[in-house]
Image: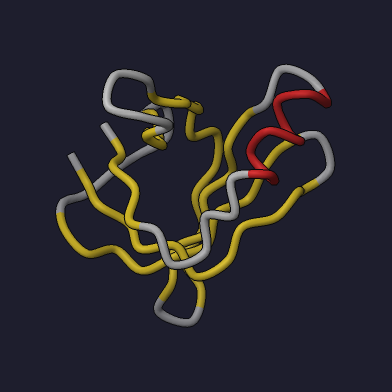
Length: 85
């Protein structure tokens, strides 16, 4: 498991980009980013690409459709700490 502190989150074409600082652990393509929506429900997105630039990771989340991209955008993840498993 890894933890990533989000510094920027935005749409990237048909996918969603999360940029952040790795706080703990390690991760790789194929793992999942978890965003807690409440005590019993998480939004989960697959990591389809990873880049490292200027001491930050750029993680591309694969989205199935436009509605899913809009959901990720609405979450306003900047400053949040996310788990990647």
